[in-house]
Image (cartoon, rainbow, N blue to C red; front, side, top):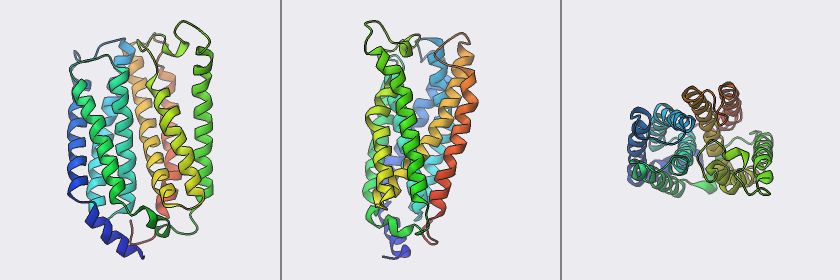
Length: 283
């Protein structure tokens, strides 16, 4: 199947279901993130955590929602590249919807956060169902450096896993709260839960599929790299606003702002390399 046929199919299947779900996702994310950012009385809990949540809300508003809508428009016009990016943006919103639900004390926006999570998962499901995943390998140039990109993912997965386990494992042998929970007001860490149970294993498997030039590898690796770039920007921003809200807190640190922005820039490199190898006529 040549690239043009795939593009034509993509124009047909990225239709009303995906559009409606993505627009709903943009609407509830704008409402939830906007109110979290702009209404001081909504959030509660430790000041550092409130500031961190507002940082996340800010990036959702100025990066997540606009990126989602731009990618939706381009994917609807037949862009495979935009569809892959859109999947990553929807995953990024889902990731942070979980954080709003479990990292912030119950508040009047709870149902909006639930709507963010449900609509992001529905958008992901509809978009994946719409894409011609088995045909994706044929759309990428044979010279695509898939092994280098797969290796990059495995290195990130390994380092991230070791970093999280460094905090988790010692906490397993103490009856009191582990160090990573002190000052957060949380009973557990939803970042550790998500990353160790879903996102890091998925990234490792996606890299394996990419190594073997399987369609799911191209799709998921592109989406995960997109999600990581957005999350790097988000973490840098939430550390910035969190540290401004409570400079004395050990939960957040202004010293982490620049490193996470740098990680976001570095993460753009394999993403750009991957998507630039899409054949002409399929972008």
